[in-house]
Length: 368
Image (tube, rainbow, N blue to C red; front, side, top):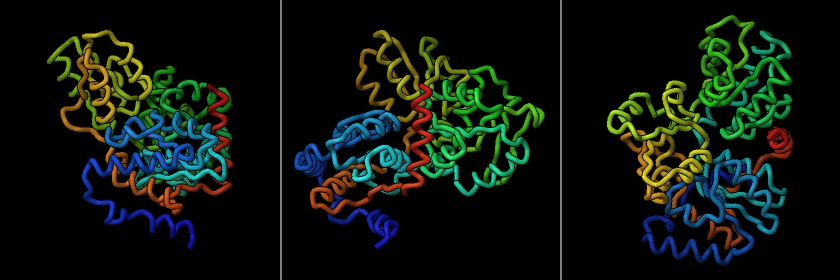
């Protein structure tokens, strides 16, 4: 059976894992975790629901967790409670005999899916015809292994929301222009904070296979933005910020740089998930915050810091729906399958893609 067939087969949760009580799920998950002991490490992304993240050995953002997985030399298995591209990155960074599991293979990322490798290859040809060898590609780590490999082959690198500014400075020291993908908003917000005007940015629409927006002349364009976005962070609006300030002017608004340009410009602060967590951790008792990021994280921050008044910027829930596909039934299935010696939902990146993806990641790690 091919890997592709195996992965398809393993995406459907068996009926025996459905409709158990919360107590049974928790007891069996802990029992399986105890049996696997040092062979297992469970990674939990900040956006995971509490019922899952409570079993994580490590919590963090996507790249932070992948780097932790790389250091777990004694473990044979990493169960990644996140989304597909995160598990791919963990597989890229770990040894060949290490097995990375994603409890639900349908836990994808809409942003990562907006950058298709075939569309990127076609766009690159158009851009090369227009500007020649003046472009270096940079991809957010929230991208597929295929996109990371493309960037690696073309001398580019990856970035996170924490180090995007440093990475772009590095990229501009090598080429006149940057192709930034897949999140247009992180690229725009970061470049603008570095002093690059919006008129020197263009938006490539991969669906149309053409430029959607060029405000200045083609020669002046320095940042080529791929038209992708985060389905969670683009739900936050300037009107929500105005409402919060009208209700209580003392409330500070902090948002993720995946939010739209207008939202970032109107917020009091913006920064990565780690930055937001640190700002709340360091804030004085009695401070008030409206946070524009994924709801599970905001709720957890509110629970961990009852001395502050913390709310979600939006009045409605803003969960990452694909991230929330990881639940107790899928986690239990993944762990008990490992106990039985029959891993399900293994994420495996082919050697060539691994090589070039690792090149892109290593360049980033050498920059910052």
